[in-house]
Each structure stands twice: as structure tokens, then as C-alpha cells.
Image 1: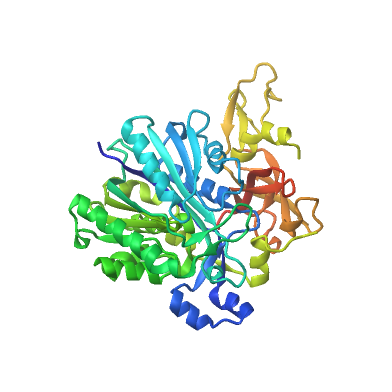
Image 2: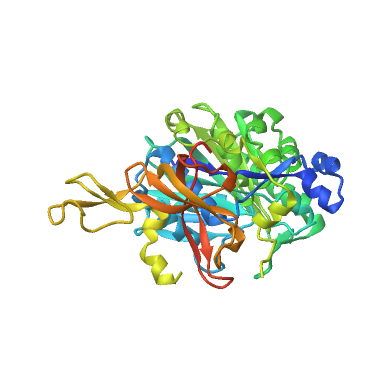
Length: 349
Length: 131
């Protein structure tokens, strides 16, 4: 049975804050940070945007792009680490706002930055078993970084929705296979009720990101017998600009393969939306027959790797919704004070 | 806003669900069960508005009501939808960019919250159509 992406939709808030502006406040060296992180600015949600509104906008865009009847969606899974409610699903809000309710199942996912791809895998299972017709998997976040913490320079906002189906005539990108690599790694966490996450210092790089991304990616290529040169494009989770470039090099992918999906320098790390944003930006320009290799990473820690082949259908659906490059052009730059207001860091009496 | 009051109008707030009389062609938002023109001869059907329209007039809220303080200053506008009906809604973005006659389109946003423990209310706001 062929399983794949029937449609996709992205959303990035309009506001941006530059690295220089955050560094100005904390007395950090902006040039060194930009060089080190390969991130120049990050997206900031509006005062009335959260993971649910971003998920809805991305999902509506995905529905508009494919023109499917939303009542065919049998499952809505939203992955985020910034669900607006501790208890009450974001996915029910999304389901209602796209007209997919009431005959559908729904749940919220959480796996740091890879909850969105975990949702895709769940939808793949339900679709391939015949339990549902179409599944909607979303990764959306308004991620948190404590003031003056290193994460504040990259923790951004955005989301991507993918409609997963099995009707060959509807599939715009076939997902040939997926492979996950997961261990209990203390690289990043946020306790219940705490506003900001903590990170486990030295666990972030090699024991966290690189171990899981490279093992997940190699595992999938070994499983299906492919090599980096078999792919036209590659996307790796982008917590900053440096990590995906290094992971690509370690695995034998070229800079040209990852370039179209490398959106982090301009919008920052959209967490659950991060790898999916790279996949969306790549689908925005891929041609029928092109192959895309993607590996998402979530702290805690695990990776989900996907091997994707684009079909003729992509040309038909692509321009019915905004592309990632259209979404990120024409930003409104804000200062730290406005950023603090938008992020709810200012408490009114 | 009370939770039941919000829930009762959920589809209208989220998706601009209104009604349409197929007899005379008039559109209604909020939804009406009876056509004001055709009375008992009217044929009412559910209709989801496209979400595009024009600003008829607006005001800028600087001293916001409880629960809206964090959003101030914001624009509150009467928007005439392309199908005909008018509604009152917030226009997202800086108030200085808002003007009468401006084309707008609908977006899904947080309308407000009941403090730190209460519900989060979502619904429709508008952005400049060229955004």
C-alpha cells in the first residue's frame, strides 16, 4: 500500500526579532552568536497567537491546498511542547476550526521538537491499517526560552500541518518508509507548571542531537538500501543553522541538498514545526520524481527519519496555499520590549 | 464571557458559520433561523462565509476591558463581509495601519482568556487582505 502526504500547509507569524536586539539587552556579542548559531532573526507570535492558532492556520492551509473534504479526516494529532492547555486537547480546537469534527479521533502529542513527525507516523499507521481515510498531523509551537538563556536566541514560533492518506491519485509525496531511534537522554526538559525549559548542557550536542539524528538517518538508509546520493534534497531538524549542516556532512549529504529546506537562519527554531518546515519549504520547490530524505529530532531523545518521493500531484496543489518563502518574506521587526509583551513576559496587575 | 455562552456560538466564532436564504439570496451573520424578508416562505441553509470583506468603520481601544488589557491598543472594526452582512471584530496589527475601506480577510486568533485558570476563547479576527 502506498502512504503519503496528500497535502501540507505552513504558518509563520509575521513578527521577527533580530539576534542583535536580544544581545543588546544582555550584553552578548551578537556577531559571535550569529556566527555560532547561524541564526540571524527569529519569528515571534502576535499577542493573540499560540500553538493552537498556529496549528489551525497551518491546518486550514493544508485543507485549502488539497481541496479535500475535511470531514474525511479521521484523526487529528497535534504535536507541540507549548500546548495552550495542560489538560484540554489542542487537536479538538483544530478539528472544530477546520470542520473535521465530530467523527474523528484526536489527541495531543509531545516529544520536544519531534512531536509533529511522531504524529505523522501515527497517521501513517492508522491510514495503512484502513482505520481512517485521511489523518491530519501537525507540529506547532510558540516555544519558550528563558530571558538571557541561550535558547532565547532561537526559540521561535511556527507550525506545519500534513494530511496523510493512501489514495494514490491524491498523494503529492509518497512516504516510502520511516525509521525511529529513541533513548532516554536527559538533554532538555520542562517540568509541569514551569514556564521555561532547562537543558542538560553537554548532552545537547553529541549525546543528544548528533547521536540520534545520525543513527536514525543511517538506520533508515540501511533498512531501505539507499545512499545520500540517491536523494535530491535532505532536511534535518534545525535547532540552529549549525547542527543540520554538521549532521548532513557527517552523513554524506551535500550543502546543496539541504539548502532549500534550511529555513532556521531567518525564522529560528520552530520546535515541533522545525523539521516539517524544512520539508514544506522543500516540497514548495521539488519536482515530480525528486526524492527527499528527512530526519526530525526531539530532545529526551529520539529521531524520526523519512524517505519521501514527490509525485506529479505536487504541481497541481503547490500554489493553492502560501509557500514557506511567501510566509517568511515581509516581516515586521520588533524590539525586545514588544517581544516581551507578545510573549507574555510582562505581567499586568 | 461564560463558558456555555461561548460554546453555544463556537462554530460561528471559529468558522464564520452563518445562514443563507435560497429564496431571496440574503446572507445572515450571526445565523438566523428565519429569513427576515421571506418570513415563512424563506428557505434557510447553513453557510460558511468566505471571510473576506471591507472595513466600514473602526475605533481604537486604548483602555481595554478586563481580559483584553494585554492586547491594547487594538482596533475594533465593523466589517462588511463580501456576502453582505456586517460584524464587529478586531483587526490584527498596529491601529495606525487601519483605515476605512480597507480590504480584510479572516484569521484564527485568541479572543481572550478568563484569567490564568479559566478558559481560553478562540475565534475570528481580521488582517489586512494583502498581508
